[in-house]
Image (tube, rainbow, N blue to C red; front, top):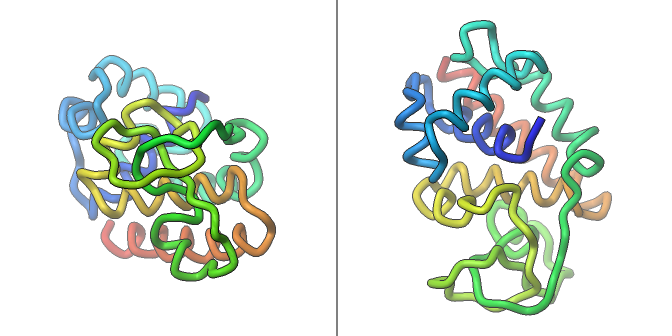
Length: 171
């Protein structure tokens, strides 16, 4: 698995039953169609999508995100930069974590926030997140599972469960 595989799977969760073409997925995520195709093949081998690469195996994805994400794709932090809010500084986590005064951001030149840098799962994540609010929330949840404390992770798991239920209901 590669980081972009998770980004693509999360984007598929936001599809609301639409079957996005490789070209559309690539366009919306700022990736090449061949990268998306290769990613879906890896996800198929990992049993994170069905054999037709259309539907996300939500139970497997949920298990991977909760128990493996922090080990496979640990978050890296850096210096204070300009960007868009991430981790506990963005929805849906920020509304439920009131004890964090630190700001965290993904680097984005046109960002309106300053904070400690978190390296996103994939370089195009900030722009893709700004185009799709639900994807943004799922990526914030992923960051929280990558680097959060136990209370923050509990919140992230509850939020992830909501998104997965929504995906399953719309299939």
